[in-house]
Length: 106
Image (tube, rainbow, N blue to C red; front, side):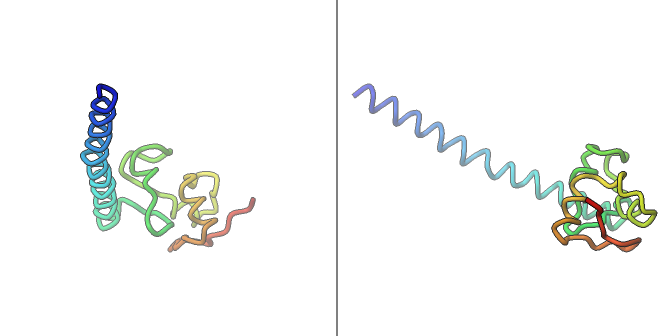
């Protein structure tokens, strides 16, 4: 009987955690995507892939947090400065560069 009560409580805790935490995670990603869209509209985010990368926005690359200049670097042929997320997007055919050719030499 104690075993059944313990398993029931454990299952309730797991289900409760998943129920309450999962939507918050989706909301955070949605808010991030909205912030990136606003930066694109303002001209602060010159990403070369669609949808735009998240890596640069979060400051995980060489640009100032909240900006992306990967498209500029594609235009100047400096592919070594393009973030890894954009390079992956280019390899997957998601490149929509306005500045240059979306070719990566492997």
